[in-house]
Image (cartoon, rainbow, N blue to C red; front, side, top):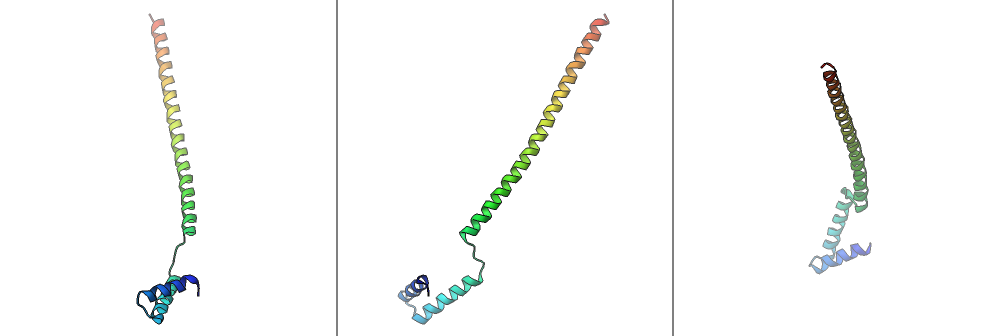
Length: 99
């Protein structure tokens, strides 16, 4: 038996349980623990690290899409502005030459 199990049995004994009762409780606790899906801190840290990586990757992907979309809009606005200015200049030239 490990020291931890002996400490549990002794603590139960001090609480008024008989030695067989304390051993039975500890044994059932150990059995339940072995049968359950306990999660360790290391497992959680690994899962959390994987989720962080996945979130960062997704965030970078979405930000890249937004940046590309913004660049397309800015270029479109610039082309539209240049087109408008050229039309105004050509219209002004045509107006001045027609007089």
